[in-house]
Image 1: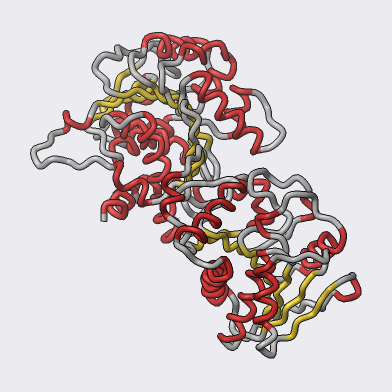
Image 2: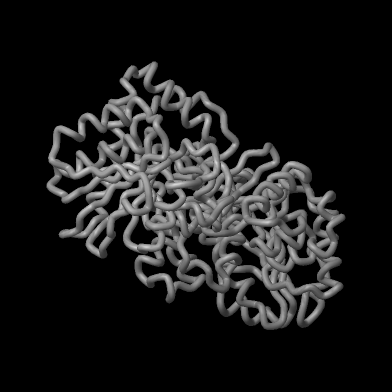
Length: 501
């Protein structure tokens, strides 16, 4: 699913109006119907609704929603914030339509006009929408602050008022804090960064029939991953396949006290479809991995407690290093040798990234289209600190382009930046996956896909999506608090099945 910036969203509306064709007031009605249906699924029985409207098209949406809620027998009141003498044509038309119904509407010009909001009220924010192009001030700022201080259930129409589409919050006290955001057709870029969580709440994407020709032909560099995008990327297995057809992965992993990372990543690799895996481990881990995961072959290092030598890379179709290896100086040399000697893209995670962060000049020697899978702190160690997550994401893209690597920056909406400048945000996953070993599982999944011959790009995209989907399936059984990394591995089969269904 494409992520468009503000001007492209406006152009999509205009193109649809001209080429469907459809009157703008009817497109607004379509959006209002979609919103109303969603709102009805969220509001508790017995609640009344207070709709706060601005004077633009977002306010017009709110007026139409109020009318449609009334027709569904929901008690509703409308409050129009008169911050100007100007208003949009579609706002005016919907305000006239509203007069045909016995819906109480109030024009608010000052703080004394603010209504009392009770626990039995649901607030609908239709003040500003996506057309925001200047700082919020005056009566609009006052009503936003007032609604936020009431702390009752709030639903934002398209985007919380005061929040920019293309950037993270710049004036955090001047933004509606919604519990639910009902956004039209596409996710907004600003929704995908942690700083926006308190304003967005949970967001639902509502299709409103914007013209497919515009969507298909308009270029963007940012995408939101969906199952319909992932399904065609999956390879089909032939009936007469054997394990040699699905690659042999090498995982360099483990040290004293950290052999669990080796086990988890190795299991995830085979569960993702690799034909064979060899895990290179220190001698202390031999009994651990052979007992915990007998399907894995073990390559034993010369040292007892940490890794000191690089195995021959020739037999392997994909190589990953990092989970649990520690940062001993001899282990650092192994990472350096891997970077220098690899003839195909490699995957670096965890301690391999920490080592890279201490030896930044090595970045320039990474094999083309290698994959780095950092969490934010690991990325900062490599690329330098950033003022916020939006700036970190911009830097992430620059590093991908400069060094011709794919970077999987882990988070709720994990971002995958590519050497061509494109970025893919993941839509699967949940807070229960913030648990020890979850990142090792992701490394194993991506390694397993690489071993099977998936490109670095597709291995990242499919791997991240599958990882989150398996976590979502697991959370349905365990809840968030009880979810552990092995639960994700155990649900990978169901995740594949759900995609292939």
